[in-house]
Length: 98
Image 1 (tube, rainbow, N blue to C red):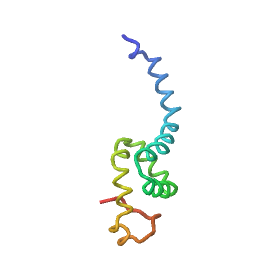
Image 2: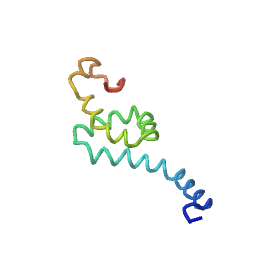
Image 3: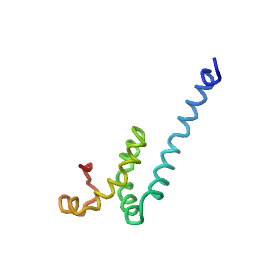
């Protein structure tokens, strides 16, 4: 039985994850878009994250890699002429991208 298999170590790690996971989500939502998006896309993301913060957090809890992989495509779809012609300039009601 190694140190990794110890029940005490597993409990400590579980407690740390429970304590710091909300902080990690907050950091990921605040830092990742600043690194990956340009200024126009970042402005769009900030506008959307104010309204869809819970949705973004739920997506991050389910799959952070999915969020990271599709963020740029989602913002591009929101800026597309197809979205604007179909849903208008109302960014508060956004269906998922096709």
